[in-house]
Length: 191
Image (cartoon, rainbow, N blue to C red; front, side, top):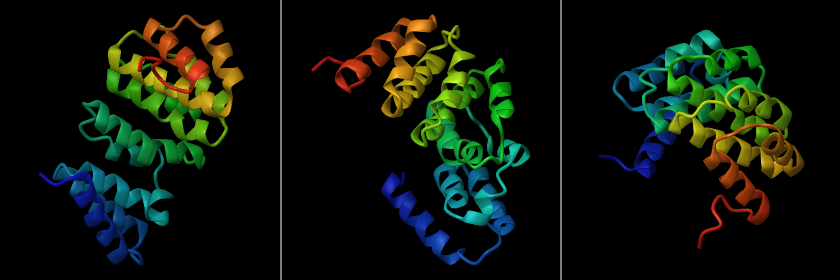
């Protein structure tokens, strides 16, 4: 099995060779990699090609949402495709809000993981609005993503993260990890 470093080296070489390709060509190539189970290459190939990335609207994201059945698959999808599409305005909060209502835990996790780039860009109010929709969800994969999303928001706006924790009934794990982050800068205060 190839290491992440080896996969990224392959993707960088492929990106170099496809630099002048159209977005449509890159997307079709990426989908072929996705069909073979090479998610990292597929997602990064799109992410690192401006024309391909610019085509990531709701319909196209659905094409790339293949086998979202693990935290790593969901987080890659959210960080490389969905989050950037939301940040760039190619999808809006209504798309992400639909995901928060899904009976599928992985779509709910994708909604939260997609907030990370917004928080990094200083759009913490939008990110926390999505978090607020899932405060009652106690699925472990969603709870872990909630903690991540609020901790990420705290890096840009500690006061907003503190208000969120004060005003919402969140899982104990979320409260503990966010409060630790606010107090110590770390997810866990354990040594």
